[in-house]
Image (cartoon, rainbow, N blue to C red; front, side, top):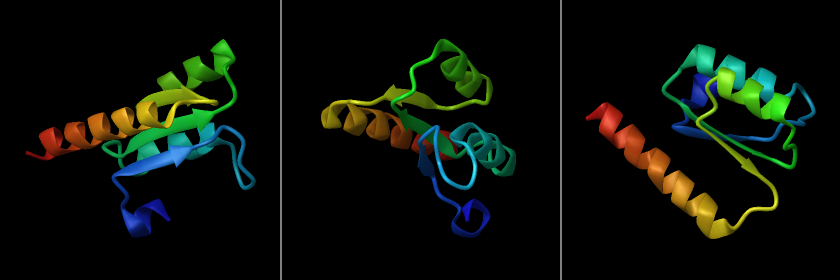
Length: 86
């Protein structure tokens, strides 16, 4: 899907049906490292957060979260994309 749709930003949870969010994160970053990946999850274990950072997650937000905070993060990531692309 990522190869076909070429998204700028992807939201992932840690637990998903087909594969884990960490597996999906690794695959997405291997396809295109410029895609901004924001993890949205209830999992706050240090090992999982550290692994997501190792795999270059752009943000790691734990649930519950404020919608205005998510909006701020998305705006920041869009601005980063615009800057990177000139």
